[in-house]
Length: 199
Length: 115
Image (cartoon, rainbow over all chains, first blue to last red; front, side, top):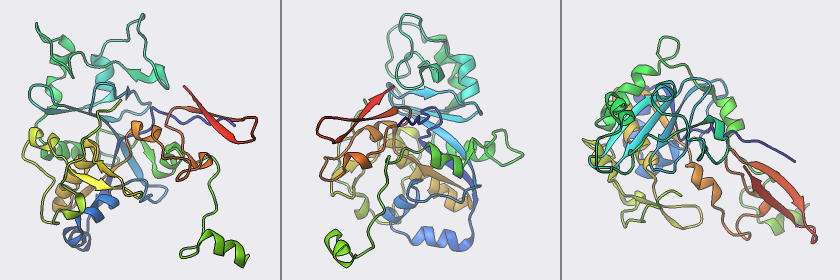
């Protein structure tokens, strides 16, 4: 049995254009931190099937692969080198800036053709002049999470926004890796032994 | 490999709801270290994408617009619990890997991963 799970389509974060009611906001304010944490998990809370989703790749360390996507999507770099900053850019912008892979050391891992090269010295600054690719990324610097929120929300508005939705919640369900043979499960409160006795 | 976040003593369930994940700048935002207990009782440090999503949703709740979700890091899919907790047949594959099922001599299913 062969199944291919697309690596380039798998995001680290998702954005949904959700409008909060006053009840939602009150609920959020009274929730414990752990309740909020579980509500933010995309695997625990699958969305209605036709919900448009905006995929965001979060690149937090040097070996984390960055992928191009067929539909333009957002990429966040979080680097702690010298002064910690975020960079918010799109895959199309990155394609224009980053150099192709060296022929002697091509991209590795799943889906190597869709992998983008790393910005040089993003994770480790060396002596000498700053590489041009890193200078070109300067306009995409974001100083705080507050600005990051404003930028993502401004771009990801359905129909009128700059960004198109990457996929729907139905497609996300296919992308997420799952067990090959899911088991039927056991009714709550029943131990496996009891379940077989009753049957 | 992802640099493993050291498990800090600050647990997610001990933080009062009024405490904010949102920090004024990226330096403080990226320095957040909080741990949580998973379903098996193991302590794990929250990765940066999860703490960032928590901070972004605090702003979203204030402004009443947008909601962010996190998914497990790609690296997280490759680690598995022992066979006692997670039988081989129930293991999900990492994104981007082709799953090939082979039966060995004992008749036990064995999974091999290829790029």
